[in-house]
Length: 338
Length: 289
Image (cartoon, each protein chain N blue to C red):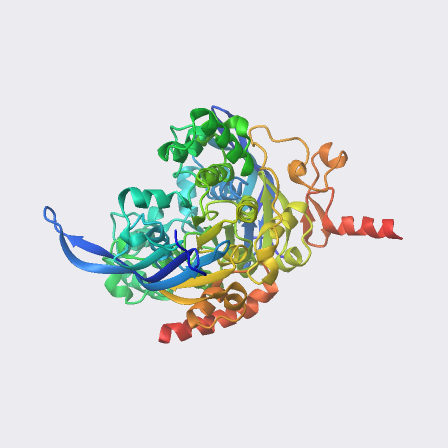
């Protein structure tokens, strides 16, 4: 495979709070390949957003700090850059869009001002040229009558339209990487579909890579090429999207898919969903053993409660952090049967 | 109560709810009206779940609030167990309200942070003067036990618990007066998937055990399917389609329902490709209308 665009190595981000040190991201490594979308999926508190914010150098310091690891982008380690140097990377080379477009756009500035501000920060453009470019960008993201809307304030737009404006700002400097943190979570399904389509279109036409952070397995299935499943600050499974959904390996991934009510399942009304008992562990004192073990139906008094399983390659390109991946359980069953 | 032969538990006919649009700094003038709910009719049978789906602003929550008379309808009829609710007020409405309860979306803001878990669950009993202090205390523990919440935590405060646990507290409170009908307004949309499944299962179990009737309001079509016998679809304040869940999901009659269903991302990357084509076709068809 060619050189990855972004390479995260053993990233550890911790929050130093009164209650103790929260191990929010605990040894995460992954690559983002050129022209591909990496989905990061997990439930609240699993560390998916903190991973993204760490890449961008946007974690709140204090209480948070990257205590270990590297974020290699091109020939630089982003964790070593000064705030001033990071500002040149942000927006220009790596752009980010957030879940809540109402709070990430400034309510007191027109969207024209917010767009041209970004453009003029990174490029040597006259006011007039920036305005022309802003209109082009808004048209590109499918905002009707773009020229008339530059003077409007964010509250005049619907949630879907605001997210389009956010995308226009994000692509304005032609970044190589776009990080989208739950970009469609606050939107209605029909609007969500349109915004996901738009993101994919922009990724292709602008030749970008994307990191898509979501809690929704459906969104991952729709939009990602490769997937990381995170649990309690760690990657527990990593695979190309088809491999992950065809043959999920980690008991947590399986349980998550089982807990999801299925849209196309006629019998679902008269069945119980397979809920996952319990809750994720406290990240102030994370267990030294497999972090999913207390909720896992395959964990016993064996390896998983003795030490932390390694993230290992169970088949080419498919990694799992568990002593009981699905394919090995199947193999054991066969052995027992014969 | 006279129930001659057959009557559904809830009967909504031609429900309309309009809100005034006001202007002016000192003297509010009504400059316009927004029709949030327009001519909506449906029945809910005893022991049944009707799933009410729609996008934001479709009027689904307003409909639910009108059913409970939290909002008084502009016109139309709402009959609950044979009684016309829109004509009742004061004490007679209060008496009937005991039999209809609400479970809220947000377990973080719907529980009073200064009340203990026990007080929250027991409050409806106090308000409606049910039982003695001791009997109430016993009932609270019983209710918490039923919803799978450890009754020994009755003296704790809501902030000490996770979203799923708080939603259990909210459900226990709704059950306190042994209602017939529970309106669930997006009861699981603030919860993580693994917790969401626990709460859906709980609601199903409680329905079986107590013969509850649900009006289940939600935007997540997969969640709604997992608990509903029949489905009603709202769009711009109107009911566009209503029918057996099986029929609405497998062969929706309305274009809008079809568009809504194909827009849901499903956890199957192979199927997603076909669905994407179908979705674009339907969306452009709807846009042209």
